[in-house]
Image 1: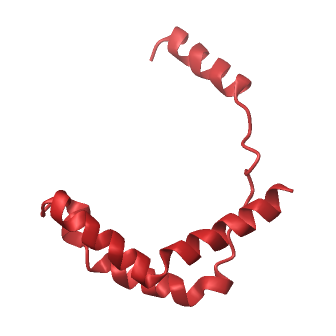
Image 2: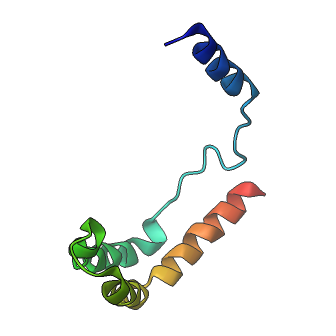
Image 3: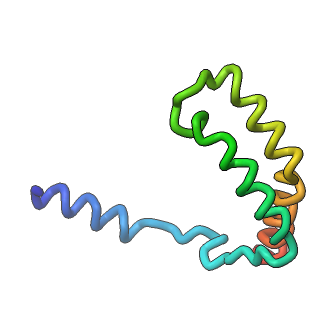
Length: 87
């Protein structure tokens, strides 16, 4: 590794800005049941995640399974907590 390379990364690090959400920790307690349902839904789509099936066919099925399992409510809870953290 060259000195120029090391210097470039030192400058990037020095000039980096910390995200305003740094330190946020999601509390999954309110959506623990939804989380379990989502994990089960994802398990059914391992072939999609690994590329063994046609995504044009299976993606819509996977998305519907996540919606049926409560992904929208889960995401809303994450967003609610993040919004509260950012105030």
